[in-house]
Image (cartoon, rainbow, N blue to C red; front, side, top):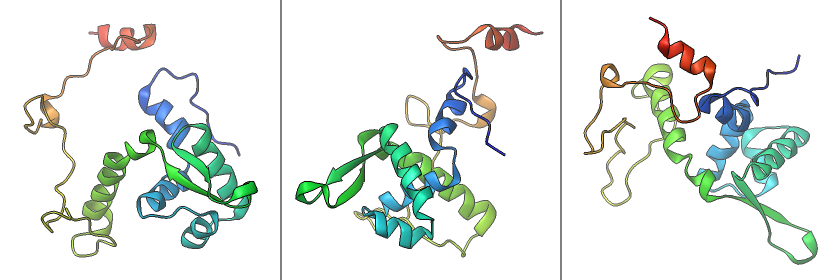
Length: 160
């Protein structure tokens, strides 16, 4: 059974899932943040089949999350590194890790700890902040149609 595609859906989350939604994809990105760069190292650290890894790496390169860099002349060896767009996923990866540490792994069972190298202290949980840097509670968030809202979105917000 093939997975549902979201290409035509007018939703930022759906469009992000088109790029990031496969379960191997976020693990490959995690590996990049841990310093993995070579195909064989991705394969070893993830235990992923070569054909699936090749497909996912190509997908991430095509979507400008990773770039493939030749490290030897004549194309005999390549490495992968995060692009600026890929590096921008750090907050997302951190939020997912923190959520899992809290709700799935449990306090004291965290597989990885992330600390600020300048202070040695754990990084704080990712929060939604206002323009002054203060935490916004969920009940104070207002969601409204954006500039690219289609009729379906407009209808959802105009329903009494």
